[in-house]
Image 1 (cartoon, rainbow, N blue to C red):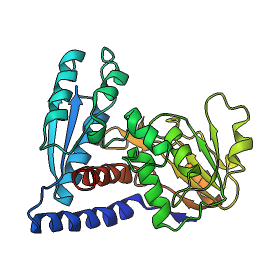
Image 2: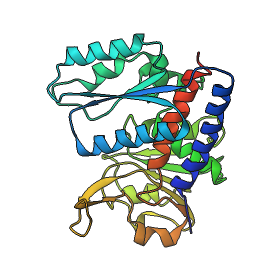
Image 3: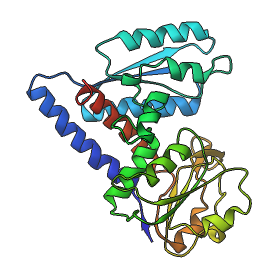
Length: 291
C-alpha cells in the first residue's frame, strides 16, 4: 500500500506556479489576483478561505478576502459579485459555500462571470468541460486528476466507481474520468444514495472515489484487493483529545481499507491540499491563458 500524499504533490505544483509567477514579474506582466467572498463566520469556511489566502501568498499571487455579514441581503451580495465581475484587477474569484439559508446558491453561481469562475461551477464552464473544451475545471476533481497523474496511476480501460453525485465532486468527476483526456478513458459507474447493494459496485472498482460526507461509509468489505482508493470526505467529528475539540474523518475507514489497497489517500493530507492548489492553477489560467 502506498499513500497518495496530497501535501507533497500540492507543494510540487505550487513550486511550479511560483516559478511561473516569477517569470511574469520579470517580464513586467500582471500578477494573478484571486478574490474570495466569505459570508458569515462558519468555522470550516473560515479555515478553508484562510488556506486559500495563504496559498496565494506562497506562490506570489495577489489576493483579496471580502468578509460580509451573515445577514447581508441576497441583492447586496449580488451587487458585490457584479463589482468583482467588472473589476479588471481581479482575475478570478470564489464565493465560499455554504451560504446563509436566505441566499439562493444557484442564483449566486449564475451571477458570476464565467471568465472569472475559477471554482468551475458556472453552467457555462461545466458545459465546456462536458464537451472537452478548454475551461476551468471544478477544483476538487481537478486536484484528484493531478494526484492520479503525478503518481502515474493507469486509468485507461480501468473501472472507476464514484460514490456521491454532487455537482462539486461526484458528477464532474464522472465526466472527467470517462472523457478522452490524459488520466481519463476509464469506464465509470456513478453510485448515490439510492444505489442498491452499494458493495456490489464498489468491490468491482479498480479506482474507487468516495465523496459523500458520511464518515466511515466505506469499509474493507467494500473494496477489492489492489484497488486505488481516493477519499474526498472531510467531516469534523468531536474528539476531546484534540486541541480544537474535533478531528477530520474521511468517508473511508482507513484502518480497515488501507491494507487492501495499492494506493489510498489519507484524511487529512490527501485530496484537500490539491483542491486549494487547483484553484491556484485556474487563477493562473485566468490571468494568462484566458486574457
